[in-house]
Image 1 (tube, rainbow, N blue to C red):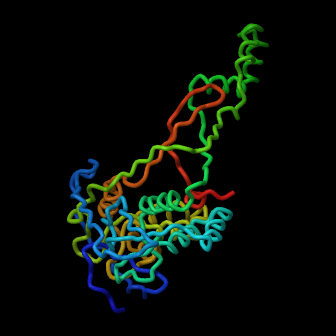
Image 2: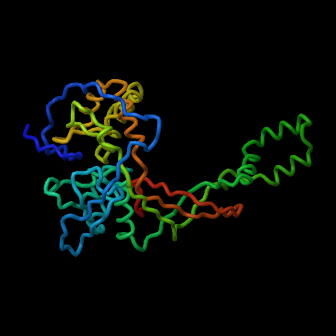
Image 3: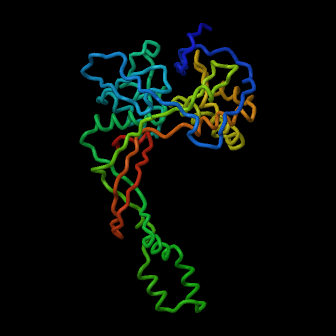
Length: 339
């Protein structure tokens, strides 16, 4: 296979159009990183590369990803709002709860100027936090007049206690019959009891607090590497990994799911710089790792600091009046306002 020159960072490839690299030997013995039990100690500064190729485009806008492009072989990304021709794919994603359809739709409205990625579906190359950042950008720039309904649960202790009176009604009846409580006490419990559904909150979102956390440091590549196999690099999982993981037949087999999930989780954190390795190929590699190498990969995962978009909303319980601030957690396939 003709290979590109190794890049110091991972250079992802599009699996359908790139020949698969030859099988690799088991990863050689690797020294365990120091201070494995400590968090965020083996870090180096992450430098934002900026937009290295200015373009004159009245439709697309340059976006600065929260990761600062630290894990990619490209240093710019351009995105344009959705148009009517994209709505069918978005509706399919929502109707079928299809993450693949959503990633395909996002890929249709973004590109990079990096020549190695010309024509590739770029949303598949993004890490999960960066992908959701692009979803937020598209939501704000494509659906400017749409409302969203946020569903949550009231956490007020007194409210939950009153609901418990309904849930445990049979127990209170038993206590009354046993003489453990009086009729007056049972009547008061019945008066205070609230239905379980009263804890469910729904509120149209008109205002939220959105925070974008940038990745300021990254795991030190000089520590998190396989010295004898420099072509294998560690990096966060991408949307392509997420889809391969979710669609793997082993995930539908109860007997294989647990072991597969363990190896797949490790495998999503490595890749080959010269050509895309499928998840199965990477599982074969990590399956030959020593316990020390497994610890190294797992510590790399632990060293990945949180970055991306965090959106919070204040919601008021109509039953008890308690006000709480909750973090919005939206599934990708239902991120946009479709019935």
